[in-house]
Image (tube, rainbow, N blue to C red; front, side, top):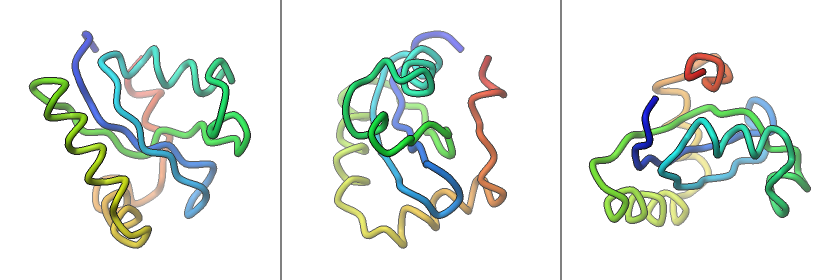
Length: 96
C-alpha cells in the first residue's frame, strides 16, 4: 500500500479497548503501534490489532472523519467494525 491518508481503528481484543487514529502511511503507523514505538495510549493499554480502516483522497478529509468517529458512541464504533470485519481479524497481515 502506497502512502495514502486513512483513518484506522485499533483494538486490544474483540470488544476491547479501542483507539482511533489518522495517518498517511498505514503500514508504518500500525507497525509502530504493534512494536510499542508509540508512547501513550496504545502502548499503555496494549491496543495493537488493526480492526478497521478507511482510505481517503486527502488528509483534510481523513482528519475530519477521524474527529467525527472519535465523537461517536462506542456502540457505533463497534457496529462500524463488525460491518466490515465481523470476526475482528487483524487486518494488518493483509496489508504487508
